[in-house]
Image 1 (tube, rainbow, N blue to C red):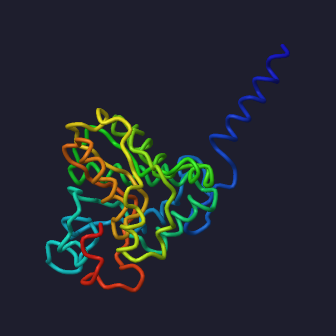
Image 2 (tube, rainbow, N blue to C red):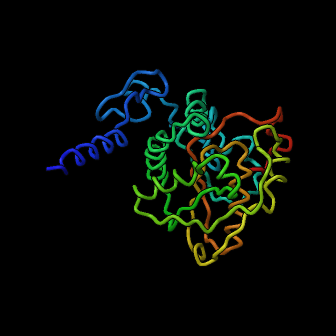
Length: 258
């Protein structure tokens, strides 16, 4: 008899954890109920900046012309096979990423993972294993989680693929946001290491990350993975920015820094 109140209390706590109250659309603020719970209401989901149509053959950014590659990829020396992104990094997408990183909205990662899984399938990826852009232990402690790791796990569950944590980051780096393309590449040089070559040897690898800007992070990770014996390395990101960084033009030193 006494077990019934305990069971009821447990079920209430479980319900609160799985279906927390006050879940609202991240874009318009509308409260969500039932099956609609997630990141967005049905109306805003339709308005997401999902990438469709013509894209750069290398980085996957939306293209406004008939060129094969965008300006920043024309002379790329990256060892990545390709990158594809689910969303263009518009204000709406930026709000989502910032909400995940700094606003306590990790639940958004589930919805982003669904979009990224759709991109994986529609773009013809054939991975043997997924991995993700890692953080140092100190960086992960500071944030409390690695959003790229969570995304990779969610995508892997949907695709029934393994996820490897054998790509590691061995030193802290400066924040990339205000760095030029050259500075980004230099900042990341030697920052990553593979701890077990067998995890990637002779395998097609897909690296998961949240935002593709110049691609310097994915390029450095891909270089390390190829040296570890990976057959191919591609990128899969939640978002990609269409704009250049630190006031540079694509025809200057942003070329080749993916």
